[in-house]
Image 1 (spheres, rainbow, N blue to C red):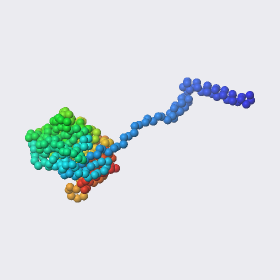
Image 2: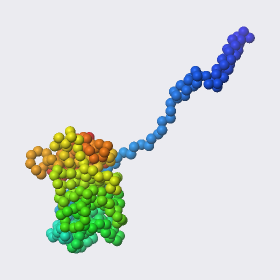
Image 3: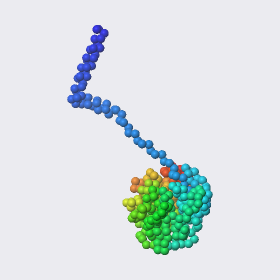
Image 4: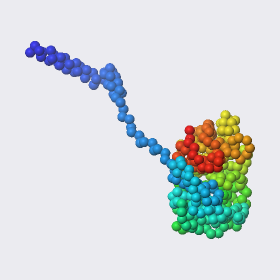
Length: 370
């Protein structure tokens, strides 16, 4: 008994102590409440499991040839590699290649005559499978100004010259030809998801209509005017409205006046503004000039562009390819970093990571963004 007595006493005392504490805690004793709150706060909270961020992947392999150029030599772009290749035909004018159907869209001969109010160069239209296939005639008459595939490869969009106007049309390979817009200029492009076409109306082509940038649904619905800027029929033959990959933004180079301009806009017409630069950047001619063309970065706050000031002396040389950072307003450039030197942009390899561009030798090359 003498051995167990202290143990019994300790238990009795401990029970009494607990009995004294418990009522205080229940009755709202501030010390006990504070201790309980501290213990609760010190417990680690459960961290929610976030889904992994998708790793950017290269765009599908594609064929590249300078727009409307001829000859049988082209370039195959795949996973960052550039390979020279020979086409199954010798286009008079190369228009487009669709990864979705593996076909080339081209004219059989170089345009040798003009049609329509503005006497624009026209030719026929063909398609052929790459890397080999039998040519198929799509439009036999010399009435096509330009043509591009829809992203799904199920059809193509083209400009048809008539005696009175220039028509923007959508034709399905399975049949059916839809008029999208009339009195258009040869400055246009198809949205990445294939649901719309952006085009311009411009002075200089002898057709009516208010100058500006427009977007029309691919199914032929009503068009939306998103900018009133007039390009005055100027610029390069490969100038076009420049879509972001998600189709939420557009840019359009304007060469009809000096200094050069670029308009950035939303395709629904809710936003349109000129691309501008902070005063510090604008004072630097190598970094603060409006680019001649751009690729929209998928993060929405960067652009990759080609500066309009040639590197070195004289005109016609290569230019600096830059990564631009945009302010929250979506149209003011706050920083610019050199990426490469070359003549133009081709497309993304891995969106946001690397781009294909035309290097100083006039050939496709790959540049990795900083």
